[in-house]
Length: 384
Image (cartoon, rainbow, N blue to C red; front, top):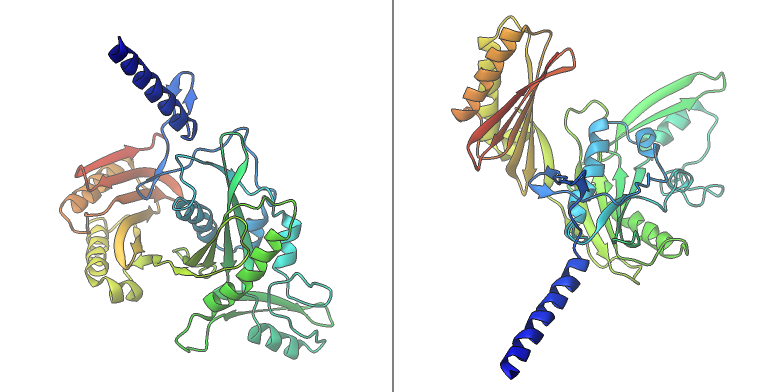
C-alpha cells in the first residue's frame, strides 16, 4: 500500500512540475484549429507577436530617418535576431517599441545646442555665409540618424526586456539654404581620416551611455534589462545593407555600460573587390555563374546581383536577384531550370542556403530555394 502511495505521489509531482514548466513556454499559435508555423529566418525560428498587436509609437520615423530601404529591413530584422541571445523566443513575445515616440527620437537626432540640449549629434555654429555653413556641415557631419526600439513581453503583455539599435551614418547628406532661399546640397563620407579606427563606432559607443541614462531616468519606462546595439548604415544607393558593429547588455537596475562585444556580421555584394579580399573562391565562383547566365541567355538583357551574408568572415547565406526586361513563359521555365542546374553543379557555393528571385520589370516571376541539408531545390513560378 505504501508503494502505491509513493507511485501516486511521484506521478502527481511530475504533473505539477510539467504544468509549471509549460507556464513559461510560449504556446503554439493556432487559427481555426490549425497550428500556425513559426517563420524561420537565417536558420532561427522567429518570435511570436503578442496580440492584440501594438504598433511602434514612433511608427514611420525610421522611413524618414534612414535613407536606404535595405538598411531599414536589416536594422529591424537584425535587431530581432540578435535579441534572441538575451530574450528567448520560447519565453517572450515580440512587441514593437512602446516608449520612445517620434517626438523623442527626433529630439535625439538633432544637433546639440542650447535650444536643443537633447541632441546627440555634434554641435555647429550658425553661419549666414553659405560657404562657411557648407564647410561646417562637411567637417561636423551628423552621425546619429535613428534609434529603433523593440520590446519583449511575457504572456500577460508585461515588458520584460528592451532592445535598441542606434543607427549611425556612413555618409551624411545635407541641404543648406542661402540668403536667397536657394538650396545647396552636399554629402560627405563620415569616417575619412584613415586613422585605422572606426570613428563612427567610437562616437556611437560614447553617446550610447547618454541613451541608457535617459531611459533609466524616465519613470514611464520599466526598469528591465536593455540590449543595445550600434548599426552603421550604407550609402543611399547601395545594393547591400549596412552592418551591426557592436552590442552591450545592461542588466535590470543598472545604468552603466561595462563592455562592448564586437559583431562580425556583414552583407557583401558578389562579385566585388571587397568580397574577394575575404572570400576569393565565392566571389570568383559567382562571377562565373553570372557570366554563364548572361552567355546562355544573350537576348534577355539579364542583370544578376548576388548578396552574401558573412558571419565571422564565413559565408553563411546567399541571395541572388536576376532581373530581365521581359520573359515569355517558355523562357522563364528555361531560365529557372538552368539556374537550378547551376546550383546543383556547384557553380556557386551550395554548402549554404541559397535563395534566387527572378523578376522582370520589377514584377516577380519565380523563386528558387536551395537547402544544403536536404540537397534539394524548391521552385515556385508565379501565376500571372
